[in-house]
Image (tube, rainbow, N blue to C red; front, side, top):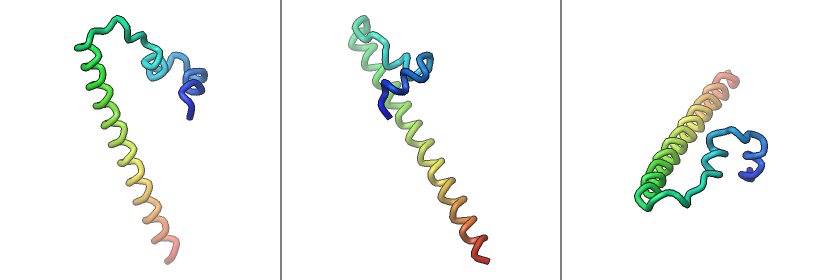
Amino acid sequence: MDLDDLFAKRPQDPLALLGKQDLDPLSVEELALRKEVLQAEIARTESKIAAVVNFRASADALFRKGSGQ
């Protein structure tokens, strides 16, 4: 998905607003902190994706076992 498409569909979405934020007024320390927070959010998002994929795979396996009986 193109980020411009996401921004156009949901202009008030926090992610869209984050991507449009002006970074010029931020200090090096503020930028470093922002980067750290964003990396933590990426890790949290990846963890959630993995949990959803694993749950889906478990559910699919369960229903495949049940349909063969």
